[in-house]
Length: 125
Image (cartoon, rainbow, N blue to C red; front, side, top):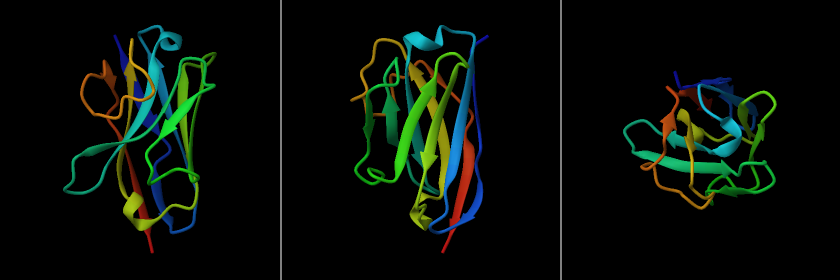
């Protein structure tokens, strides 16, 4: 059974940091691009970041460049999103996604093979 389980969300103040984790099981993790998406209240799900198979290359939405860092540990089958200098418009649900055969430039929310259930991040001003 394929599962992606996000954790690490919470309620923080503007300027704070959080590190999200995505634990994967049921598929060959190292063969998949891992990505993070954000869905703000009442908005569509949008791309945040992606990291390639080995973790050496990543891609970011303009809104998070310089603040967020995507990484992975293939020995633990986990992906991470370190979020620094969080702002109120970063509030929402964060999802991890996995894709076999995609590139890190895939910034749309369709065509991903597996999705997690999401973790809530709330940033207060």
